[in-house]
Length: 369
Image (cartoon, rainbow, N blue to C red; front, side, top):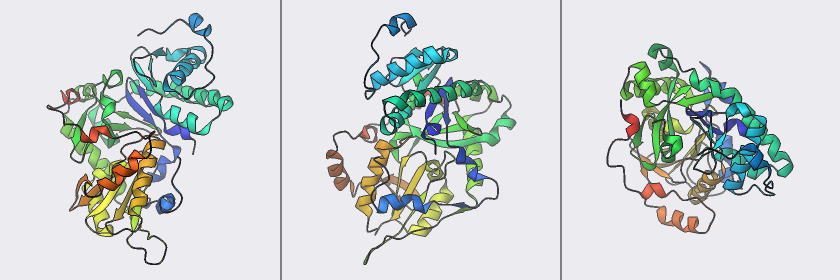
């Protein structure tokens, strides 16, 4: 699958583009959990896994020989955007890997940076960057075409899990509608407007336009995602080897809501029916959910792979493993000592600091109506 088709973008209100395979969730289709995806977990691994300066003044600078720092990469992408895609009106922002576009919008380069750094050499990098910017120039007008009629838009709503960082800084100024998750302080639950190739996050301005409150959006979003899961088939796999114990399952559907399915009570219930309780669940990125039984032979190997996927895969969510017991999710503290020891061995790893931070004292402004 084209890696750039799953890159995070933000325009006016945040919007994301995803893989073309999302229509596997067609009505009446039996959705099979992609157990084969987890072969990497059992085996060798899942992957490695203000106003800007004028164009004239920028052209006098030497083109960086390496693009492996966020600052250099952002500068280089801005050069290409200004020269080849002037309709984006790209400008620098106060944050590395974020550009301002169309005067008020924001464009995240985080996943593009990951993809280019991991998969392309200097010669191919510019081609990939231009492909990405071209897709943004094509998609940007969609952010202005949100239906004003509630009855029209309600069927397109879905719940989504996203990092708390989305609500901070310039890119969070659109006041996303969200609510906290009981099992994580670094993740939030938001709501999106689903389209064929993208989804756009719901903001407080949308609520005013539709004349509804957050609960109505949440109820509609859950009902819509639930209908996509009614025919979901859960298939478990077992580890190989003499004396191997336990079993596991995965959800790797490319519709953009693989991880978000854990929000649905019926999905939690069915996972517990298959794996017993307590069992363990991880959502290292938006497009992947993996769960395994309490007695699973490869428990530590899975935990290590979850952390690697979080650091190296697109749309990362959390490196943490969560315990599911009687349909309730909580961070798995009993086995955290082993995980913490493994984390310290990788100096380049990104830590999930917000999991240990104090919760917000009041309801976020994004929920104001």
